[in-house]
Amino acid sequence: MNLEPDYIADYNQSQLEAHQRKLSYWTQEVATAEPIIRKLVDFQIAIPSWALGTGGTRFGRFPGGGEPRSLEEKMADVGLLHALNRASGAISLHIPWDIPTDAGAIRQLASQYGLRFDAVNSNTFQDQPDAEQSYKFGSLQHTDPAVRQQAIDHNIEVIKHGVALGSDALTVWLSDGSCFPGQLNFRKAFDRTLSSLEAIYAALPDDWKLFVEYKAFEPNFYSMTVGDWGSSFLYANKLGPKAYTLVDLGHHLPNANIEQIVAILLHQGKLGGFHFNDSKYGDDDLTAGSIKPYQLFLIFTELVDGLDAKGMNHAKDLGWMIDASHNVKDPLEDLLQSVEAIQLAYAQALLVDREALEEAREANDAVRAQEILQDAFRTDVRPLVAEARRRAGGSLNPLALYRQLNVRQQLIDERGAKTVATGL
Ligand SMILES: [Mn+2]
Image (cartoon, rainbow, N blue to C red; front, side, top):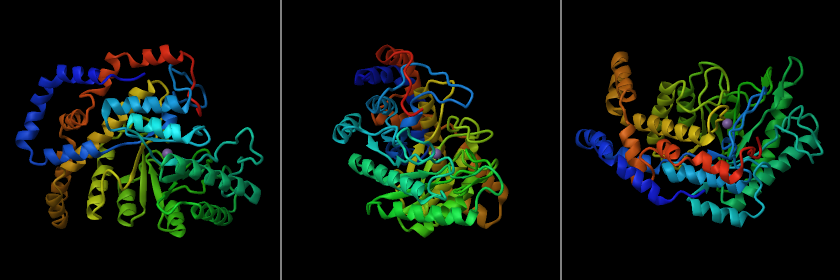
């Protein structure tokens, strides 16, 4: 379905007076309001193609209907999100789930929706029906060179699809590891993985980045070969300047200090990108900011600080993406909630009085430092985020408009009640 621009304009008109009342405090009282709004307008968060359908667990899956049946329909869904919030202007594809039959036509479609292609993702955690080799015991780490070669060739194939679409990064997440003590020679697994990654790195175009994503556990439950930021950082350093670490918020052991990890990686010039989600127990892939909003804010505080320290562009120099799954929600509604949570945390981080914070730190004034951060976190920045959306042509309240327009019912009418998104 296509969203008529009039719908957004009419909706915003109906909400404008109330919005302006809330915004007036900011424009009159807060000197930094205007630069924060401008930064929010520029800030885009990529949507992964696999988050557009209902997720499942190993116990079951309960699709909600109207799910995208093709790459074209996935792009239409992201186009719809972007029309509503003007902050989801990129899509991240997963190969082989999203192989374009006609890259030129897909690029054309992307430009119609105002989307660009974010990092492309390879898949060596499943066996494909026509594959000669199995990844049951790993891919890039495998003992058999033929399996490693198949996985290397696949990644190079993914780069080629990405080049055809105008993407400029490859994300490699490996499920490689072991399930039982004794199963794997850790040193050999490391060396084999490194040499496989080197072969992929050699095929990377000059202006591309390689993101090495880590994960502490699952699907292997004894060891993961790229299991933590240290391993990823090590691989990225050994590979070279085009390789970076990718941080997925749900891929840590419980209570890991992710903001500190992010600060150090950024400081060392090796933070490449982000996968946002939230979790209570493991890799829960819940809506960003739904469980630990203060942690999300603290992460953004380090990101803003680190990006500014290096003179980096907030919107362009890191890959920002959601990596979530939705068992009981309408996926599009969940993605609107996640994008908003990320924007709120970013806006609050931009509010932090950095000069005062640094003074408090130098004076070892822990109370004052904590107050400065909490002051920003406890500020309601929703009017700023709404204003950024309005200025960019989006809806003052994307979720409310989505429901008012009955979008899901329209998608069900168009696509059917029992569609299943490809790849899930
Ligand atoms: Mn991820």
